[in-house]
Length: 76
Image 1 (cartoon, one colour):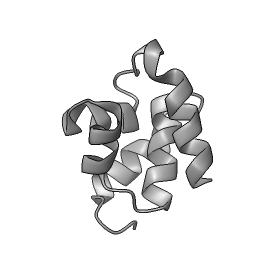
Image 2 (cartoon, helix red, strand yellow; image 1 turned 180 degrees about the vertical axis):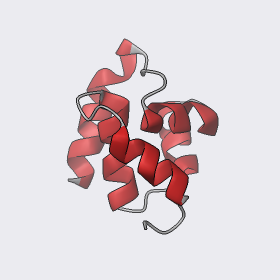
Image 3 (cartoon, one colour; image 1 turned 120 degrees about the horizontal axis):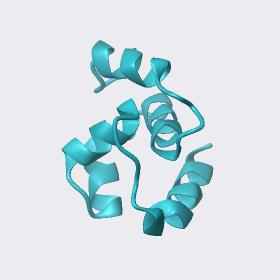
């Protein structure tokens, strides 16, 4: 398990549709142990919003797409 992430969240992320940007962001953040609080601050959202993205239960605002891709690429 990735340090700092619950088994439940990791499993939910693993089962979610990997084509969704928020889910891909979650996979990269889990793999690299990037804290949810850091992600939330970076994108100007709450931690709950980030958890929802990671689980695929909500999608990021289209205005964030470009910077999310850049963030993902910087970690990959």
